[in-house]
Image (cartoon, rainbow, N blue to C red; front, top):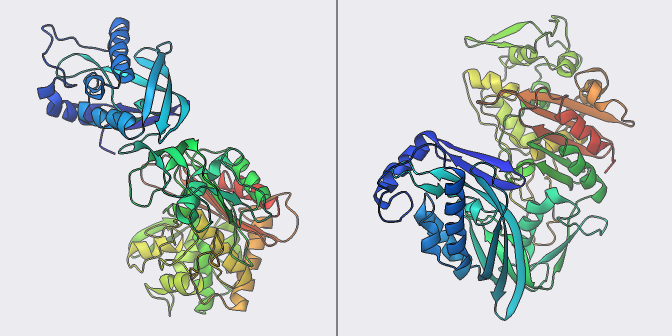
Length: 543
């Protein structure tokens, strides 16, 4: 997004406020067309925010032209007439929306809410359409005219940059997605699954055996991005698509992420790799649970500990001293504030307390190299090889071979290491079973795709990792979040600093019996504070 553009969400409506350098740059370009494409410049150029009368007059003219289907005329009352005319033209020509009636609500300053009622007619089929949105009236910099601050959400609140509206015979037949127990999965019951269900339909609509209908959809910009259906004019026949989702775990995940903004969680079945739940609480519709590329913080110490054990550097009950600081190639690393040093610590003790310095001091030991963590991640945990085929788009993790300070940072989940909650749920599953089973949402038997493979862990390594995670959940940094959970439990906390964020991202991964889950919250602080309760809530369902 260009500098000077800020996005806010008000009552489900996307509002774009343009100011500063971005706004000034636009108006220099648009000066020749009078900020909105109309001819002439007022003799007396006004300044300051538009007044009540100006707001009413501008919106009345804009709405009147829009109602009549006069795209160019309506666009002339905006501060980006070219972009406005394209989308308003598509509103009539491509989306086949007619009989438009717009009712403005009570303005709040220069912001005007409104209701749109219309009809969508295509191929002999028609259905009523209704929705709410809002716009803002601003002062044109070069002319002083009161203009609609143009943004796609003016036309429909679901539209973003470069999106458009289209009514046509569906490119993909509808699906009836069902969980592992045969229960239907719908957006209404599981709102967080909306983007996932759209992605499943785009990929498996035809394979599931359905027939297409006629729909009004938002066609999103970007290759491979699924359409968002808005209105069905003629129902197609849905094909039945069985997923690995557990309705109980999904319901718990949906509820858990509601507690923290910008949070995501994934649960998998370690013995099979089946995804039991995927939920996001985000304003942008991004499936961060599967696609995030973010530093995982100290949850990465599961992989680092495996590397140390597999290479004979140390073991669970062997030395891993935890000093106040550790220097790696002139860069000093510290522990969390308040952590007491322990020069006699074992790997298990440093793991359960999440001591950064213990891990950084050990990565210089022979036979470790710049590539050792990468090899462990790829060969043992199946990460970073761009070959996961989950059923929808997903990120496979990235652990590049690096030297210098990033080698040390990578050992504690910072630097160039990137993961998603899906990746970390898989890491936990591999750690406690010893075998890598690529996570998947749809059985590979449906389309014959080949799942990724990896060597997995030695039995002794897996046993040590599992025991260290147990200690972390019952005596270490994850104790508070996991308190009250019965059965065989284990966990690892993490926090990761991200440039530009006031707080660290919160990470947490854990297991209970045959369910493993991982969560991330942006600006959530320590792992046990935000991501921990999310994971614990999902584990409590038992899958």
